[in-house]
Length: 497
Image (tube, rainbow, N blue to C red):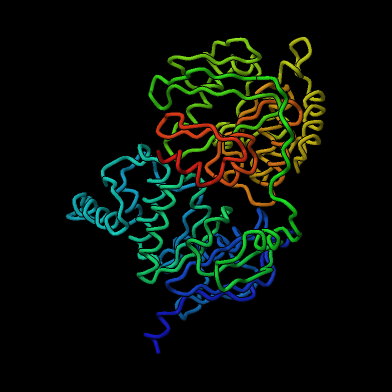
Protein backbone atom coordinates (compact mmCIF):
# COMPACT_ATOMS: atom_id res chain seq x y z
CA UNK A 1 0.00 0.00 0.00
CA UNK A 2 2.85 2.32 0.82
CA UNK A 3 4.48 1.71 -2.58
CA UNK A 4 1.21 2.54 -4.32
CA UNK A 5 0.71 5.79 -2.41
CA UNK A 6 4.20 6.98 -3.33
CA UNK A 7 3.10 7.13 -6.97
CA UNK A 8 0.25 9.52 -6.18
CA UNK A 9 0.52 13.17 -7.12
CA UNK A 10 -0.93 16.33 -5.61
CA UNK A 11 -4.56 16.65 -4.53
CA UNK A 12 -5.88 19.93 -3.12
CA UNK A 13 -9.47 20.29 -1.95
CA UNK A 14 -11.50 23.22 -0.67
CA UNK A 15 -8.61 25.70 -0.56
CA UNK A 16 -9.65 29.21 0.47
CA UNK A 17 -7.62 32.28 1.31
CA UNK A 18 -8.32 35.91 2.14
CA UNK A 19 -6.08 38.89 2.79
CA UNK A 20 -8.02 41.10 5.19
CA UNK A 21 -11.47 41.74 3.71
CA UNK A 22 -10.40 40.55 0.22
CA UNK A 23 -11.25 36.95 -0.62
CA UNK A 24 -8.66 35.76 -3.15
CA UNK A 25 -9.37 32.01 -3.21
CA UNK A 26 -12.70 30.27 -2.66
CA UNK A 27 -13.12 26.49 -2.37
CA UNK A 28 -10.51 25.51 -4.96
CA UNK A 29 -9.90 21.87 -5.89
CA UNK A 30 -6.85 20.88 -7.96
CA UNK A 31 -5.27 17.53 -8.84
CA UNK A 32 -1.92 17.00 -10.57
CA UNK A 33 -0.65 13.50 -11.31
CA UNK A 34 2.92 12.30 -11.99
CA UNK A 35 3.99 12.69 -15.59
CA UNK A 36 1.48 15.36 -16.57
CA UNK A 37 1.47 19.10 -17.21
CA UNK A 38 -1.57 20.99 -15.92
CA UNK A 39 -1.93 24.51 -17.32
CA UNK A 40 -3.33 26.95 -14.75
CA UNK A 41 -4.80 29.92 -16.61
CA UNK A 42 -6.51 33.17 -15.65
CA UNK A 43 -6.19 36.92 -15.68
CA UNK A 44 -4.00 38.77 -13.18
CA UNK A 45 -5.84 38.66 -9.88
CA UNK A 46 -7.63 35.39 -10.73
CA UNK A 47 -5.89 33.60 -7.85
CA UNK A 48 -3.26 31.60 -9.75
CA UNK A 49 -0.30 33.01 -7.83
CA UNK A 50 -1.99 32.62 -4.45
CA UNK A 51 -2.86 28.99 -5.19
CA UNK A 52 0.67 28.31 -6.44
CA UNK A 53 2.26 29.96 -3.41
CA UNK A 54 0.13 27.86 -1.08
CA UNK A 55 1.31 24.69 -2.82
CA UNK A 56 4.92 25.97 -2.81
CA UNK A 57 4.84 26.79 0.92
CA UNK A 58 5.03 30.58 0.73
CA UNK A 59 1.45 31.13 1.98
CA UNK A 60 -0.81 29.12 4.30
CA UNK A 61 -4.42 28.51 3.24
CA UNK A 62 -7.23 29.60 5.57
CA UNK A 63 -9.22 26.46 4.81
CA UNK A 64 -8.94 23.25 2.83
CA UNK A 65 -6.43 20.42 2.69
CA UNK A 66 -3.67 19.12 0.41
CA UNK A 67 -2.23 15.64 0.05
CA UNK A 68 1.04 14.88 -1.75
CA UNK A 69 2.18 11.40 -2.71
CA UNK A 70 -0.59 9.90 -0.58
CA UNK A 71 0.24 11.84 2.60
CA UNK A 72 -1.13 15.03 4.19
CA UNK A 73 0.86 18.05 3.01
CA UNK A 74 0.89 21.46 4.72
CA UNK A 75 4.28 23.19 4.27
CA UNK A 76 5.12 26.13 6.50
CA UNK A 77 7.83 27.44 4.18
CA UNK A 78 9.28 26.98 0.68
CA UNK A 79 12.11 25.01 2.30
CA UNK A 80 9.60 22.47 3.63
CA UNK A 81 7.94 22.25 0.21
CA UNK A 82 11.29 21.68 -1.49
CA UNK A 83 12.18 19.02 1.06
CA UNK A 84 8.92 17.29 0.19
CA UNK A 85 9.73 17.44 -3.53
CA UNK A 86 7.76 20.51 -4.68
CA UNK A 87 9.50 23.54 -6.17
CA UNK A 88 8.47 26.76 -7.91
CA UNK A 89 10.28 28.53 -10.76
CA UNK A 90 9.29 32.19 -10.53
CA UNK A 91 9.05 34.60 -13.45
CA UNK A 92 11.57 36.78 -11.61
CA UNK A 93 14.37 34.31 -11.00
CA UNK A 94 15.81 33.83 -7.52
CA UNK A 95 19.42 33.08 -8.39
CA UNK A 96 22.51 34.71 -6.84
CA UNK A 97 24.18 36.53 -9.76
CA UNK A 98 27.69 36.73 -8.29
CA UNK A 99 27.93 32.98 -7.68
CA UNK A 100 28.71 30.32 -10.27
CA UNK A 101 26.18 27.99 -11.84
CA UNK A 102 27.43 25.12 -9.65
CA UNK A 103 27.20 27.23 -6.49
CA UNK A 104 23.64 28.28 -7.33
CA UNK A 105 22.58 24.70 -8.00
CA UNK A 106 23.92 23.73 -4.54
CA UNK A 107 22.82 26.75 -2.49
CA UNK A 108 21.97 25.57 1.03
CA UNK A 109 23.51 22.11 0.59
CA UNK A 110 27.10 22.62 -0.50
CA UNK A 111 29.05 19.29 -0.40
CA UNK A 112 31.79 19.29 2.22
CA UNK A 113 34.95 17.24 2.62
CA UNK A 114 37.31 17.45 5.60
CA UNK A 115 35.60 20.66 6.72
CA UNK A 116 36.01 22.39 3.35
CA UNK A 117 33.76 22.89 0.34
CA UNK A 118 34.29 20.04 -2.11
CA UNK A 119 34.26 22.12 -5.28
CA UNK A 120 35.17 19.22 -7.52
CA UNK A 121 32.17 17.20 -6.36
CA UNK A 122 29.95 20.29 -6.55
CA UNK A 123 30.95 20.89 -10.20
CA UNK A 124 30.51 17.21 -11.06
CA UNK A 125 27.02 17.09 -9.56
CA UNK A 126 26.00 20.35 -11.26
CA UNK A 127 27.37 19.10 -14.59
CA UNK A 128 25.39 15.88 -14.23
CA UNK A 129 22.13 17.80 -13.71
CA UNK A 130 22.87 20.18 -16.59
CA UNK A 131 23.63 17.21 -18.85
CA UNK A 132 20.44 15.49 -17.73
CA UNK A 133 18.52 18.51 -18.99
CA UNK A 134 20.53 18.73 -22.19
CA UNK A 135 22.09 22.08 -21.25
CA UNK A 136 25.42 23.25 -22.62
CA UNK A 137 26.30 25.57 -19.72
CA UNK A 138 29.60 25.51 -17.85
CA UNK A 139 29.14 24.97 -14.09
CA UNK A 140 31.92 27.52 -13.47
CA UNK A 141 30.27 30.47 -15.24
CA UNK A 142 28.91 33.29 -13.13
CA UNK A 143 25.13 33.52 -13.30
CA UNK A 144 25.29 37.24 -14.05
CA UNK A 145 27.05 36.43 -17.33
CA UNK A 146 24.20 34.20 -18.54
CA UNK A 147 21.22 35.17 -20.69
CA UNK A 148 17.76 35.05 -19.12
CA UNK A 149 16.99 31.71 -20.77
CA UNK A 150 20.19 30.13 -19.43
CA UNK A 151 19.45 31.45 -15.93
CA UNK A 152 16.05 29.84 -16.07
CA UNK A 153 17.69 26.57 -17.04
CA UNK A 154 19.94 26.84 -13.98
CA UNK A 155 16.82 27.30 -11.82
CA UNK A 156 15.39 24.10 -13.29
CA UNK A 157 18.66 22.24 -12.71
CA UNK A 158 18.66 23.47 -9.11
CA UNK A 159 15.13 22.14 -8.55
CA UNK A 160 15.94 18.83 -10.23
CA UNK A 161 19.06 18.48 -8.09
CA UNK A 162 16.83 18.89 -5.04
CA UNK A 163 14.83 15.86 -6.23
CA UNK A 164 11.71 17.86 -7.00
CA UNK A 165 8.80 15.74 -8.27
CA UNK A 166 6.40 18.64 -8.89
CA UNK A 167 7.51 21.91 -10.45
CA UNK A 168 5.37 25.03 -10.66
CA UNK A 169 6.33 27.32 -13.56
CA UNK A 170 5.17 30.95 -13.32
CA UNK A 171 5.29 32.60 -16.77
CA UNK A 172 8.36 30.57 -17.83
CA UNK A 173 8.48 31.89 -21.42
CA UNK A 174 7.73 35.57 -20.73
CA UNK A 175 11.35 36.54 -21.44
CA UNK A 176 12.13 33.80 -23.96
CA UNK A 177 12.16 33.75 -27.73
CA UNK A 178 11.05 30.94 -30.00
CA UNK A 179 14.25 28.87 -29.92
CA UNK A 180 14.64 29.22 -26.16
CA UNK A 181 10.99 28.28 -25.62
CA UNK A 182 11.52 25.11 -27.64
CA UNK A 183 14.49 24.22 -25.43
CA UNK A 184 12.36 24.73 -22.31
CA UNK A 185 9.61 22.54 -23.74
CA UNK A 186 12.12 19.81 -24.52
CA UNK A 187 13.36 19.92 -20.92
CA UNK A 188 9.80 19.65 -19.62
CA UNK A 189 9.13 16.67 -21.89
CA UNK A 190 12.29 14.93 -20.62
CA UNK A 191 11.33 15.40 -16.99
CA UNK A 192 7.71 14.51 -17.68
CA UNK A 193 8.88 11.18 -19.16
CA UNK A 194 10.68 10.56 -15.85
CA UNK A 195 7.39 11.01 -13.98
CA UNK A 196 7.76 14.63 -12.88
CA UNK A 197 4.54 16.66 -12.61
CA UNK A 198 4.10 20.31 -13.60
CA UNK A 199 1.76 23.20 -12.92
CA UNK A 200 2.27 25.59 -15.83
CA UNK A 201 1.11 29.23 -15.58
CA UNK A 202 1.30 31.30 -18.75
CA UNK A 203 -0.37 34.20 -20.55
CA UNK A 204 0.86 32.85 -23.89
CA UNK A 205 -2.17 30.76 -24.69
CA UNK A 206 -0.86 29.69 -28.08
CA UNK A 207 1.81 27.56 -26.40
CA UNK A 208 -0.51 25.77 -23.99
CA UNK A 209 -1.76 23.20 -26.52
CA UNK A 210 1.85 22.25 -27.26
CA UNK A 211 2.97 21.52 -23.71
CA UNK A 212 -0.03 20.90 -21.44
CA UNK A 213 -2.12 17.75 -20.92
CA UNK A 214 -5.02 19.47 -19.17
CA UNK A 215 -6.25 23.04 -18.62
CA UNK A 216 -7.71 24.56 -15.45
CA UNK A 217 -9.17 28.07 -15.77
CA UNK A 218 -9.52 30.45 -12.81
CA UNK A 219 -11.49 33.67 -12.45
CA UNK A 220 -12.05 35.78 -9.33
CA UNK A 221 -10.46 33.21 -7.03
CA UNK A 222 -12.51 30.25 -8.26
CA UNK A 223 -12.03 27.49 -10.81
CA UNK A 224 -14.55 28.20 -13.58
CA UNK A 225 -13.57 25.58 -16.16
CA UNK A 226 -11.63 22.34 -16.53
CA UNK A 227 -10.56 20.83 -19.82
CA UNK A 228 -9.33 17.22 -19.94
CA UNK A 229 -7.30 18.08 -23.06
CA UNK A 230 -5.23 21.11 -23.99
CA UNK A 231 -6.65 21.08 -27.51
CA UNK A 232 -9.16 23.85 -26.77
CA UNK A 233 -9.74 26.93 -28.97
CA UNK A 234 -7.91 29.97 -27.60
CA UNK A 235 -11.09 32.04 -27.90
CA UNK A 236 -12.95 29.58 -25.63
CA UNK A 237 -10.26 29.78 -22.95
CA UNK A 238 -10.05 33.58 -23.16
CA UNK A 239 -13.81 33.97 -22.79
CA UNK A 240 -13.74 31.71 -19.73
CA UNK A 241 -10.88 33.72 -18.25
CA UNK A 242 -12.53 37.12 -18.68
CA UNK A 243 -16.12 35.98 -18.19
CA UNK A 244 -17.46 37.52 -21.37
CA UNK A 245 -17.58 36.97 -25.09
CA UNK A 246 -14.72 38.48 -27.09
CA UNK A 247 -15.83 39.77 -30.47
CA UNK A 248 -12.27 40.52 -31.41
CA UNK A 249 -8.82 40.28 -29.88
CA UNK A 250 -7.25 43.13 -31.83
CA UNK A 251 -8.75 46.56 -32.57
CA UNK A 252 -9.42 47.70 -36.11
CA UNK A 253 -6.56 49.77 -37.53
CA UNK A 254 -7.31 53.03 -39.30
CA UNK A 255 -5.80 53.96 -42.66
CA UNK A 256 -2.50 55.86 -42.15
CA UNK A 257 -1.96 59.36 -43.49
CA UNK A 258 0.13 59.94 -46.59
CA UNK A 259 2.85 61.69 -44.60
CA UNK A 260 6.11 60.18 -43.38
CA UNK A 261 6.90 60.95 -39.73
CA UNK A 262 10.10 58.97 -39.21
CA UNK A 263 12.57 57.66 -41.75
CA UNK A 264 15.52 55.38 -40.94
CA UNK A 265 18.26 55.24 -43.58
CA UNK A 266 21.02 52.60 -43.65
CA UNK A 267 21.23 52.47 -39.85
CA UNK A 268 24.00 50.36 -38.31
CA UNK A 269 25.27 49.56 -34.82
CA UNK A 270 28.94 49.67 -33.79
CA UNK A 271 28.47 46.28 -32.09
CA UNK A 272 27.10 44.69 -35.26
CA UNK A 273 23.77 43.84 -33.61
CA UNK A 274 22.06 45.38 -36.65
CA UNK A 275 23.24 46.92 -39.92
CA UNK A 276 21.87 48.50 -43.07
CA UNK A 277 18.32 48.99 -41.81
CA UNK A 278 15.94 51.14 -43.88
CA UNK A 279 12.26 51.87 -43.25
CA UNK A 280 9.66 54.62 -42.95
CA UNK A 281 6.63 55.02 -40.70
CA UNK A 282 3.77 57.32 -41.65
CA UNK A 283 1.47 59.29 -39.38
CA UNK A 284 -1.16 56.93 -38.03
CA UNK A 285 0.76 53.82 -39.09
CA UNK A 286 1.77 50.88 -36.90
CA UNK A 287 4.89 49.05 -38.06
CA UNK A 288 5.62 45.79 -36.28
CA UNK A 289 9.12 44.36 -35.90
CA UNK A 290 9.44 40.59 -35.92
CA UNK A 291 12.38 38.21 -35.62
CA UNK A 292 13.91 35.55 -33.44
CA UNK A 293 15.89 36.22 -30.27
CA UNK A 294 19.20 37.86 -31.27
CA UNK A 295 17.75 39.35 -34.45
CA UNK A 296 18.62 42.87 -33.27
CA UNK A 297 15.09 44.23 -32.76
CA UNK A 298 15.58 45.67 -29.29
CA UNK A 299 19.03 47.03 -30.15
CA UNK A 300 17.57 48.77 -33.21
CA UNK A 301 14.74 50.55 -31.40
CA UNK A 302 17.04 51.48 -28.50
CA UNK A 303 19.37 53.14 -31.01
CA UNK A 304 16.48 55.02 -32.62
CA UNK A 305 15.47 56.16 -29.12
CA UNK A 306 19.01 57.40 -28.37
CA UNK A 307 19.72 54.76 -25.71
CA UNK A 308 22.38 52.89 -27.74
CA UNK A 309 25.03 54.28 -30.11
CA UNK A 310 24.79 54.38 -33.91
CA UNK A 311 27.87 53.83 -36.08
CA UNK A 312 26.39 54.97 -39.38
CA UNK A 313 23.14 55.95 -41.03
CA UNK A 314 20.56 58.62 -40.28
CA UNK A 315 17.25 59.02 -38.50
CA UNK A 316 14.88 61.70 -39.79
CA UNK A 317 11.79 63.01 -38.01
CA UNK A 318 9.45 65.13 -40.10
CA UNK A 319 12.12 65.13 -42.85
CA UNK A 320 14.77 66.59 -40.52
CA UNK A 321 17.92 64.61 -39.61
CA UNK A 322 18.52 64.34 -35.88
CA UNK A 323 21.68 63.62 -33.95
CA UNK A 324 21.09 60.92 -31.36
CA UNK A 325 23.64 61.07 -28.56
CA UNK A 326 21.23 60.29 -25.72
CA UNK A 327 17.55 59.57 -25.01
CA UNK A 328 17.14 63.27 -24.30
CA UNK A 329 17.99 64.02 -27.96
CA UNK A 330 15.34 61.53 -29.13
CA UNK A 331 12.73 62.88 -26.71
CA UNK A 332 13.43 66.44 -27.87
CA UNK A 333 12.87 65.26 -31.46
CA UNK A 334 9.59 63.59 -30.50
CA UNK A 335 10.74 59.94 -30.21
CA UNK A 336 9.84 57.98 -27.07
CA UNK A 337 10.39 54.35 -26.09
CA UNK A 338 8.45 52.05 -23.77
CA UNK A 339 11.26 49.54 -22.96
CA UNK A 340 10.89 45.76 -22.83
CA UNK A 341 11.65 45.63 -19.09
CA UNK A 342 9.19 48.10 -17.58
CA UNK A 343 10.21 47.35 -14.00
CA UNK A 344 13.94 47.94 -14.49
CA UNK A 345 13.92 50.59 -17.23
CA UNK A 346 10.47 52.16 -17.38
CA UNK A 347 9.39 52.70 -13.78
CA UNK A 348 10.66 53.57 -10.31
CA UNK A 349 8.73 50.88 -8.46
CA UNK A 350 8.92 52.34 -4.96
CA UNK A 351 7.54 55.69 -6.17
CA UNK A 352 3.90 56.58 -6.67
CA UNK A 353 1.98 56.70 -9.92
CA UNK A 354 2.07 60.50 -9.80
CA UNK A 355 5.83 60.60 -9.29
CA UNK A 356 6.42 58.17 -12.13
CA UNK A 357 4.21 60.18 -14.46
CA UNK A 358 6.01 63.39 -13.50
CA UNK A 359 9.41 61.93 -14.41
CA UNK A 360 10.10 62.96 -17.95
CA UNK A 361 7.44 65.69 -17.85
CA UNK A 362 8.86 68.25 -15.45
CA UNK A 363 9.19 70.70 -18.33
CA UNK A 364 5.40 70.56 -18.67
CA UNK A 365 4.57 70.48 -14.96
CA UNK A 366 7.10 72.84 -13.38
CA UNK A 367 6.19 76.50 -13.36
CA UNK A 368 9.20 78.81 -13.33
CA UNK A 369 11.37 75.95 -12.08
CA UNK A 370 9.09 74.95 -9.19
CA UNK A 371 7.32 71.60 -8.95
CA UNK A 372 4.12 71.97 -6.96
CA UNK A 373 2.48 68.84 -5.46
CA UNK A 374 -0.93 70.04 -6.61
CA UNK A 375 0.28 70.34 -10.20
CA UNK A 376 1.82 66.86 -10.09
CA UNK A 377 -1.42 65.37 -8.75
CA UNK A 378 -3.58 67.15 -11.31
CA UNK A 379 -1.27 65.99 -14.09
CA UNK A 380 -1.44 62.42 -12.76
CA UNK A 381 -5.23 62.44 -12.47
CA UNK A 382 -5.55 63.59 -16.06
CA UNK A 383 -3.12 60.91 -17.31
CA UNK A 384 -4.76 58.16 -15.23
CA UNK A 385 -8.15 59.03 -16.68
CA UNK A 386 -6.86 59.23 -20.24
CA UNK A 387 -5.20 55.80 -20.19
CA UNK A 388 -7.69 54.09 -17.88
CA UNK A 389 -5.11 53.22 -15.18
CA UNK A 390 -6.73 51.43 -12.25
CA UNK A 391 -5.08 53.24 -9.38
CA UNK A 392 -4.83 56.55 -7.52
CA UNK A 393 -2.02 59.12 -7.93
CA UNK A 394 -0.45 58.33 -4.55
CA UNK A 395 -0.46 54.53 -5.04
CA UNK A 396 2.99 52.91 -5.47
CA UNK A 397 3.38 51.45 -8.96
CA UNK A 398 4.79 48.28 -7.38
CA UNK A 399 1.26 47.51 -6.19
CA UNK A 400 -0.25 47.67 -9.69
CA UNK A 401 -0.87 44.76 -12.04
CA UNK A 402 1.44 44.35 -15.03
CA UNK A 403 -1.14 45.83 -17.37
CA UNK A 404 -1.63 48.93 -15.25
CA UNK A 405 2.12 49.37 -14.81
CA UNK A 406 2.46 49.32 -18.60
CA UNK A 407 -0.29 51.92 -18.91
CA UNK A 408 1.62 54.18 -16.52
CA UNK A 409 4.75 53.96 -18.69
CA UNK A 410 2.71 54.75 -21.79
CA UNK A 411 0.85 57.58 -20.04
CA UNK A 412 4.14 59.17 -19.05
CA UNK A 413 5.06 59.65 -22.71
CA UNK A 414 1.62 60.26 -24.20
CA UNK A 415 1.39 63.45 -22.16
CA UNK A 416 4.16 65.16 -24.16
CA UNK A 417 2.82 64.21 -26.89
CA UNK A 418 5.45 62.51 -29.09
CA UNK A 419 5.61 62.13 -32.87
CA UNK A 420 7.06 58.60 -32.78
CA UNK A 421 5.94 56.06 -30.17
CA UNK A 422 8.03 52.87 -29.85
CA UNK A 423 6.86 49.93 -27.71
CA UNK A 424 9.21 47.00 -27.07
CA UNK A 425 7.36 43.86 -25.91
CA UNK A 426 4.29 45.87 -24.84
CA UNK A 427 2.35 42.93 -23.34
CA UNK A 428 5.13 40.82 -21.80
CA UNK A 429 3.84 39.28 -18.56
CA UNK A 430 0.36 40.81 -19.01
CA UNK A 431 -2.81 38.74 -18.88
CA UNK A 432 -5.17 38.35 -21.82
CA UNK A 433 -7.83 40.76 -20.59
CA UNK A 434 -5.26 43.49 -19.95
CA UNK A 435 -3.63 42.82 -23.33
CA UNK A 436 -6.82 43.83 -25.10
CA UNK A 437 -6.73 47.16 -23.24
CA UNK A 438 -3.09 47.74 -24.24
CA UNK A 439 -3.95 46.92 -27.87
CA UNK A 440 -6.72 49.53 -27.77
CA UNK A 441 -4.23 52.08 -26.41
CA UNK A 442 -1.74 51.30 -29.20
CA UNK A 443 -4.45 51.65 -31.85
CA UNK A 444 -5.52 54.97 -30.32
CA UNK A 445 -1.91 56.25 -30.45
CA UNK A 446 -1.94 55.60 -34.19
CA UNK A 447 -5.38 57.15 -34.66
CA UNK A 448 -4.10 60.32 -32.97
CA UNK A 449 -1.55 60.68 -35.76
CA UNK A 450 1.59 59.25 -34.15
CA UNK A 451 3.95 56.91 -35.97
CA UNK A 452 3.96 53.70 -33.90
CA UNK A 453 6.62 50.97 -33.86
CA UNK A 454 5.85 47.72 -32.01
CA UNK A 455 8.48 45.07 -31.23
CA UNK A 456 7.10 41.76 -30.02
CA UNK A 457 8.14 38.12 -29.72
CA UNK A 458 4.43 37.24 -29.97
CA UNK A 459 3.94 36.84 -33.72
CA UNK A 460 0.15 36.88 -33.44
CA UNK A 461 0.45 40.25 -31.71
CA UNK A 462 2.66 41.71 -34.45
CA UNK A 463 0.33 40.48 -37.20
CA UNK A 464 -2.83 41.60 -35.41
CA UNK A 465 -1.69 45.15 -34.72
CA UNK A 466 0.48 46.17 -37.66
CA UNK A 467 -0.14 47.83 -40.99
CA UNK A 468 3.26 46.52 -42.09
CA UNK A 469 5.80 44.11 -40.58
CA UNK A 470 9.59 44.57 -40.76
CA UNK A 471 11.44 41.28 -40.30
CA UNK A 472 14.99 41.07 -38.95
CA UNK A 473 17.31 38.07 -38.89
CA UNK A 474 20.78 38.13 -37.34
CA UNK A 475 20.84 41.91 -37.46
CA UNK A 476 19.88 42.19 -41.11
CA UNK A 477 16.63 43.47 -42.54
CA UNK A 478 15.07 40.62 -44.50
CA UNK A 479 11.96 42.35 -45.76
CA UNK A 480 8.92 44.51 -45.05
CA UNK A 481 5.53 42.85 -45.54
CA UNK A 482 2.20 44.60 -46.07
CA UNK A 483 -0.66 43.56 -43.81
CA UNK A 484 -2.19 41.29 -46.46
CA UNK A 485 1.11 39.50 -47.13
CA UNK A 486 2.21 39.28 -43.50
CA UNK A 487 1.25 35.74 -42.53
CA UNK A 488 2.96 33.70 -39.81
CA UNK A 489 4.54 31.50 -42.48
CA UNK A 490 5.81 34.44 -44.52
CA UNK A 491 7.29 36.14 -41.45
CA UNK A 492 9.00 32.99 -40.17
CA UNK A 493 10.49 32.25 -43.58
CA UNK A 494 12.18 35.66 -43.51
CA UNK A 495 13.07 35.45 -39.80
CA UNK A 496 14.92 32.17 -40.32
CA UNK A 497 16.67 33.16 -43.56
